[in-house]
Amino acid sequence: MASPTTPVFLPAAPPKLPFLSHLLPPEILENILTHLDHLPTLKSLRLVNKTLSTRVLGPHFSSFCAHQTTDLTPSSLASLFALATHPHLHRPCVKDLTIIALVYDECELENILKTGDRVESTMEESEGRRFSVTYTKCTAEELDGYRDDLARLLVRREEHSVRLREVVPAQLAEVLRLFGPRLRSIRLEAAVERGIGGVMELAEEWRVNWVWAQAVKVYSLTMAAVCASGVAVSAINVFWDTQRCAVAARDIHAHLLTLDASQLEVVGAAIKSFSLSSSTPLETDVEKLAKDPPSCHHDEDSDGSSSGAAPDEPSEFPAITRLISFMPNLETLRLRVYGPAGPDTHDELFGRIARDIRLPQLRECVLYGMPVTHASLLQFLTNHPNIENLELSNMWLMRCRETDWDPIIAHLDKKMPRLKQLRLSNLMGYSRPWNLLPIGESWMEERAMYEQRWWGLQCGGGLLVHTREFDEEELRQGLRFWPRPNGVMLGSPQVMRWRNQLKTLIL
Image 1 (cartoon, one colour):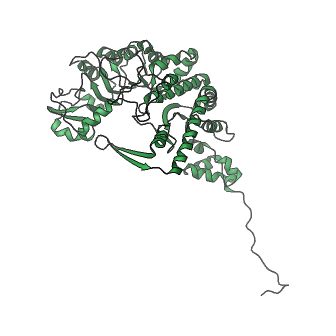
Image 2 (image 1 turned 180 degrees about the vertical axis):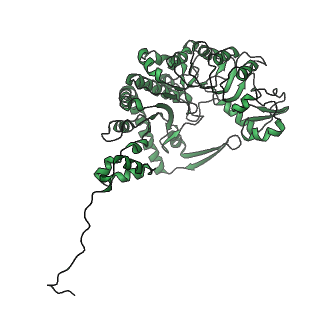
């Protein structure tokens, strides 16, 4: 043991050096950060010290903020505003914005409180559709919790409805203005809040009228906010990626009357891609719907059609044409139409588009569920000979004869020289689709491939191919198809799935 007088030598402390972040030039630090591909890692790095908390907020960090989603609730809009006004964030960072039309559904909670059972259902689509349902008896404590959940859900729905009318339009317009020219796209989608399990995607069987009533509100305030902000987005997607959700032509017509045409012209000139899910008339007036409360199970008839269609108002169909006319520089156009079943309804909708729309830069086009005549479709294709990528799906040919698809197929084959990709599906004449089995292919040899892709239906007289895709090489070989089999369709999972697909567009 050392004596009290013996000196004790301690190791010298290492010299204090500035943290690495002080020494690195911004370009080198940013290059290092690009190797960190997880946002939580970057957030943790910001907590090391004050210097890194700001220096990390460069282009790489901002790339994680490029796509934002809002359901227009207060907290969601506040987050967008914070991103747009952050003093150190590399701005503007938001490029793609998804706006959710949030629908509050009390039916599941009401059913639980009424029956005392919690129902869980699952669906498989490996062979057609198969449902399985499980019932679980709720305890008294669980029922008390569901009552509280229902009360909170109804309060949130009322508050959200008031905000959409009074507060959200101005807030959204300000957020869009702050995002500025870097904002590339706006996408509208819909989701349902049931009070159990959080926000969920819409199911095909969900209540069409009430969903679309909310969709109309969100579409209207979004378009108004875009015009008011003057933001020049290049792509607008209106419920294209949400099944069984659209904006009826009558509602597009009503909202167009409220917009400033000069503002719409400025905004529309910048749009290069427009995707729209629309429909023939459907009742979306909430006050009228409230007088006839919907079932909490289904509001669809046994044939898959909705009972809430409004009376036909063909004079309002030109609204879609007028809306598209404000977008003269479109390169991509995708249109889907929900409507009544049958080939002899609402032909004026596409007839107006074919007559009045000229889009010289159009290169990609999708027409889905559109009722057409062979004259209107030929006119549209003639007006747009430079299309490179074309899809025609679930197309009803009205007042048709057995051979009326022939001139359309011939036009695609001979008069669309720039066509590189073609997808045809359910080109409907009478009750069956046109046969898309190319001459040169044997249905017996190709049957397994078509059925595996769910493209073919077995009939008494052979294989009926309802869907086919063609690349550039196949297009050069020509579009020639075998005649439609005369025999009846044979029962199979393929037939069941095909019929269900057709129902998804029926109101």
